[in-house]
View (cartoon, rainbow, N blue to C red):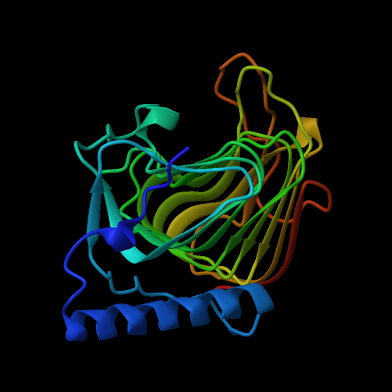
Length: 269
């Protein structure tokens, strides 16, 4: 399977352009290191500068165990695959990651309907969404752990991260602004079940709704630590189903000692 390399596009002969590109890459590497090690006291709260734009006609595949570094370029689907909140599926994504793949240092533009699809466990390092369409990333692993280190998303009218699989999703030092939900476990998928575990740490979320939505009847657990949310609900439990029916809320939002565990959540961010 061939891998698309954005760094081969464009004029590489300009010294000033090369220096700018290298500077952006150095900053991106520092952001990843801080997110992974916890060296940063808080998530980065501004969209990084773009190193250029790559228009892609189809989703870029990252093979099993593979690594893809976008060099902080912004990736747009051309033609656009964004259809608002219509479920467009994997074909509308900008990146499709196989099991164990890693995606780093990319900015995904508004023309991407589904952003990133992880077919197995995956790692997202310093991945940003400038304007989320249907959702930013979808996790479909059958088991194991996926991790989001750093990065952020803006203007998500519904959810940012959709967890349809099983196992664990870790979200570290992520920034969310103007969003509906940060993470939502699928509430009504065909074959739905669990458990799904969400760990949110060092996140900053502004002007949005729930940080996580979980299905209590499937044994889901969301743990929020050392994060900041200026408005909205920290965690909401639902009663999930596998019949594509709207899942009802289960109890009040917040720490319930079982499916929603909230520790060290600030509001002054």
